[in-house]
Amino acid sequence: MPSEPDAVHPAPAGYLPLADYGVIGDGRSIALVANTGAIDWWCLPRFDGDPIFARLLDTRLGGSCVIQPRCSFHGRQAYLGETNVLATTFTTDAGEARVVDFMPALTEAQKRRYPIPFREIVRRVEGISGRVPMQLLLRPRPDYGRLTPRVRQTRADRYVIEWRDQALHVTASVPLHIDPGTLTASFDLVPGQRVDLVLSYSSESPAELPTLGSLDLMQRLTVEFWEAWIRQCGYTGPYQSAVRRSALVLKLLTYAPSGAIIAAPTTSLPEQIGGVRNWDYRYCWLRDAAFTIRALLSLNYQREAHAFAEWLLHVTRLTHPELQVLYTLYGEADIPERTLDYLEGYRGSRPVRVGNAAAEQFQLDVYGEVIDALRIYHRVGGSFDRDGRRLIAGLAEVIARRWHEPDDGIWEVRSGRAQHIHSKVMAWVGLQAAIEIAQHERLPVSVPHLERTADEIQAWVLRHGYDPGLGAFTRTYGSGDLDAALLVVPLVDFLDQRDPRVAEAVRAIERRLTRDDLVHRYLGEDGLPGEEGAFLICSFWLVEALARTGRLDEAHERFQRLLARANPLGLLAEEVDPVSGEQLGNFPQAFSHIGLINAAVTLHEVEQQPQRGAYSRVVGRSRRERPGMSR
Image (tube, rainbow, N blue to C red):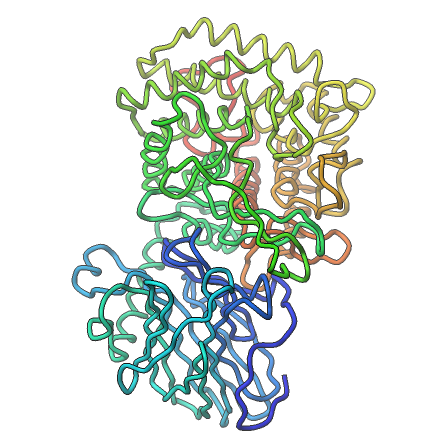
């Protein structure tokens, strides 16, 4: 990126591939940091808040914070060990420099001893070799790029950026030049020389903000925080590095104050470049959260499972026993969807959406997923008070009452409700889970009624959901379309593993929905124009299904090819373009990293105990097994 020696320039005009980004976070907000040294996405004060840096969605209007060489360079990124502290190294003809980015992550005891602002990003750039000319550009643009804030200097090393009743306090170890709504600097770095920049979003006065002298301590404590958390990981099988990085991603996506788990930290990153399939994923989908809890429990993270159970009890109080598909971080059910038509969108992909209308959908499978997650939580020692028992019973009764109804399905299509076969399968799973819990907890529900209903659902699916001509379960009743979500059939023991329909259904999806190692969700109409990439969690489901149906070597080969799809930091978006290999959709995506963890653990389990069920890896079978019980 050539430039004049002493000039200060903004970030490059074009959009970067999603694979060029890493993420940092503190359990409340997440920032996307490019290998060019640009922070192009950061929402405040929490995951679903107003982005003050939104260049990811509009290179002209969206703000960013850039630290990079003033000459041509190559940037590469790596996390500092098994942490969420990110290092970007710049290699130039003049030498090398490195910027380390992190959000302070401290224990509660440390926070009392070392107070930190409400939200904070620390950027520390240092010379490694030669003499590297550097530039700094800080250009916040709040309200999705609509506001140009006021900037003023408060003392020699401190500045404040203000908009409405909010402020971003800036501390820098080099003088900054003030332009309208912007701070810039130009400096050279030699080996051992360091320049620090701290962005503090806080209601505190500048005098109470941390000093530059405390940054060594903050960095050390943050590294120790992440190292201590990942040491709790109990996974000892193959592909440990990828599994542990995925666990660190899921921890970043967990909102610490409430226990909610978001689907992704971004909005409107497209499923097709230039298309309209652009959604806001900065909320908690109950299905995604349930999947996340299962994945984390398989790695021995019980505290997160307990937090989710408590959050679930909280958010369902207003809608009990009905569930909403998604909620805000604090459990609010009202998430209206709107478009920001003035924004260009990532690489011209309009519209940019805020909020998500899927909150208004009926998705039957969510009830099954949630009860199943609570069953696994119970298996590892979790218990339920009266409200918890009432919740489980109420969810099971909703399944029993509404399983005949059409629903919107797991993929949230906007073509209207239908009889989705996957939804029926997961309804069956949910009833089996409730029946198991009822064997140990006094649920206010008729177990014989749940058993009869589960049998009815299974019979209906086998009669109406399986097409012998296709050798597959269909996407909806009466259709000839396939649905990759039905790869869960061999994972939930809906049929005996030796039933020929199980292996046949997996082969049918391979033939019709798969390209190389990538799997599409479906190929039929869904009410929206355009196409989408291959869905990564479906690709990982196929790995699990192959392992469960006796094709372990093929499963390992597919899994290894999928791992190669991750970016250099091990991060995955929602989808992959099967032609170009480009990552698509919101980034990083919880679903994809959940799929990676579950696939790795399944591969390990099948190698060790090939006769056991898919989710016995969590704690083994239940204390008292029912024939045909899932998981």
